[in-house]
Image (cartoon, rainbow, N blue to C red; front, side, top):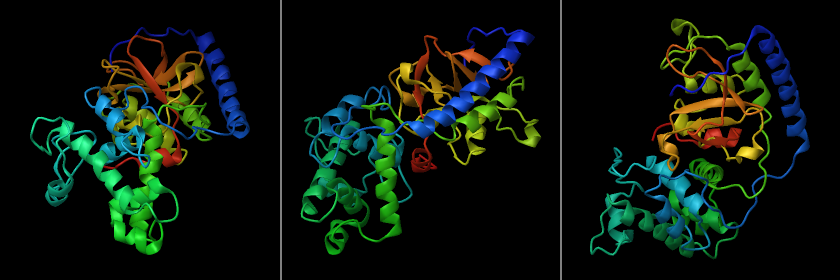
Length: 335
């Protein structure tokens, strides 16, 4: 949340800006109703910075180990399991970036970096092992009807026997939710191959943020009455999308994973735009705003400032996310 050059707007320009944003809001609804399609199939490259730079080559390489997985899917699993934290440990004794339990690691862990050791805490071993385990499960269920990737994910969650027994994804709610969660989350780690659909809720989110212009910034603010209705950057974006029925995570670097990532020249009003001092790592994102068009966003910039319009084309611009309901629902509540 660094200081960026303020957009100084006079009273007359504020009125013009309001009219401009209202036109954009209408445009979002019209565009949302007219565009079709979305991210295509086929091989999936990782979206810019979606995986921390130190792990990205491993995910890109091992994510192509077999046809049932791809780099974006492998990244989605790692994020879901640990948030890319190589020191993560769960109460169930799952360990490392890929959250292997000891028994599974003993059977499926491999020496991915060729140093003569199989270390569950070393991402250079754990990430290749996660890919190898996925591909092993895919082989176990290769004869089951249905989508091979969905069947592999179901086997990961419920076991290969359940997939074979039911001839595909078993009728377990937990397993069906897991398959949907990972395949939805996959889209936020994949570089889109076509223009992504606009969010129908974007206009409402912009309208909410527009009403908050002039509100003083509060670090940690989420707009509660006890906080005087004040916000920090991610508190504002979270509240804006909450008003249209989409629940975003609390912090900016997790909000980045709430949908696919349009390119700079594909931005539409309502997209979340992100800023970072490390343009190779989405986990280092430190600021977020709501794009309104014309190269500007509404954001809560920093202590001592107010919610306002700011330009997005600054050296720390990281990228954007087109928020989707499924993408937001897929995000883990704790990582």
